[in-house]
Image (tube, rainbow, N blue to C red):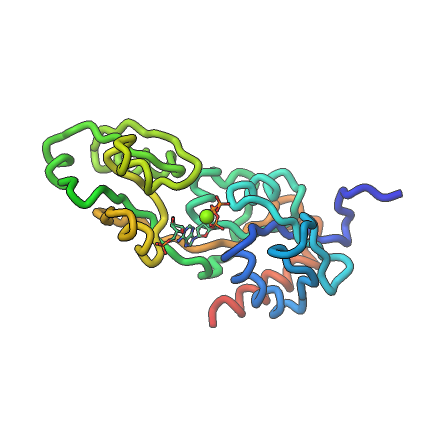
Length: 221
Ligand code: PRT
Ligand code: MG
């Protein structure tokens, strides 16, 4: 009988469905790894690959660092936004993969005068999933904020008076425009990173190192 606990030969990769999974597939291909089931159609949460020793866990984007930190996955791919909130404990971050690129921004309703509110020292109500990033940003600016933690659909908060502003990731800006919001401040550029469990890096270096190198070469193109 075998348990799921990874042995020294096996590699477990944690990915989230959607853009990170799709953008990681070509990097895996560059390392000779093909995922043989599609997470959009399969109900499986553990996906096989062409390599019997490599499996892929499908988890929520925000849970990827947690699986890797605790060694339930040996490595994973996570956005810088998610890593900043997690804190990065127990994680080695060897490379920026330059995938799922976007930016972290402050946005408000079209009629809201953000610059004046900030200049006048108003206390701003800010709704966000990214409370650590938002806290650090406004502290650096010396702006007093009440942070309201949300888990999604941040764009709604200013529309219904829950907050004055949101801090969210933006790529095309289409969602902000569709909801009568405008970007008033860019906080930082975001991309996804390869993360590796620190113990796995030591114990499974022979298996991990070629994959890290293949990812690095493929992501530079
Ligand atoms: O969706 P779920 O709640 O499960 O989690 P998630 O949103 O964290 O996961 P996912 O898969 O949507 O995003 C994974 C990672 O992709 C994030 O951690 C970011 O690093 C990165 N990324 C890149 C983005 C975007 N681009 C992006 N546009 N994450 C989210 N968005 C959202 C954005 O907030 C907006 O609501 O997508 C919507 C559309 O964006 P626009 O600007 O193109 O309209
Ligand atoms: Mg999402």
